[in-house]
Image 1 (cartoon, helix red, strand yellow):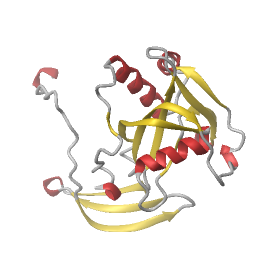
Image 2 (tube, rainbow, N blue to C red):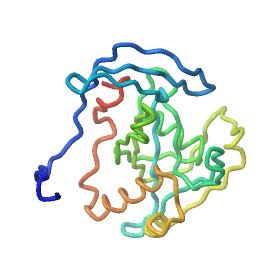
Image 3 (cartoon, helix red, strand yellow):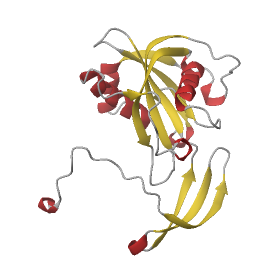
Image 4 (cartoon, rainbow, N blue to C red):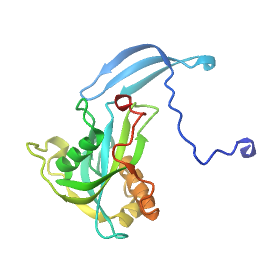
Length: 219
C-alpha cells in the first residue's frame, strides 16, 4: 500500500557504495566496449552474478545560442544501428583519452561534431545511461556564448560523415521530446533539464570543474 512508504527528504541523493566483487571475468571483448561477468557479494542479500558492458564513460554538450528566453540548441542527426534510426542528438563522445579533463573532452566533441566552442561552461546533468546493463557515467555540460570553431586535424568518418546539424528553439526541442518525436535519452534529458534550469534563471547550474565521484577515473 502506498501509505506504507516513507516520505523522502528533499535533499535525496544516490548512495555511492560499490559492493565487494568476489570474482570478475571477461565475457566478451568488443570493438569499443567489453562485456564482463562479476560475482558480487551483497551481504545478507547473498551473492549475485551480473553481466554488463564495461564503459569508459562519456560527455555531452547542450550548446545554446540566442537571446534570453528564446534560446536555440544545436542538434546533430546520426544513424544508430542498434535501433535502426537516424536520431537527433546533442554533441557527445567517449572519455577515451586517459587523463583528459571532462570539460576539455566536451569542448573537443563540440568542435568535432558541431564546429562550435563556447566561452561559458557549466555542468547541467550527471547520468547513468543504463545502470542495469552498463557502467557508463555521462556528464552533460551546458555551453553558452558559443562561437564558430574548427577541430584541427579531425576528419568525420562512418556515421559521423555528412551528419545533418541545425539549430532549434529550446522550447520546440522540449515539445518534440514530450510528443515522442525525439527518442535519444541523453538529448531528451538534456533539453528538459536545460528548460528547467532556464526557468530557475540558471541558478541550479554547477561549475564546469565540479567533482565527479561517480566516475571511477575522476574520484
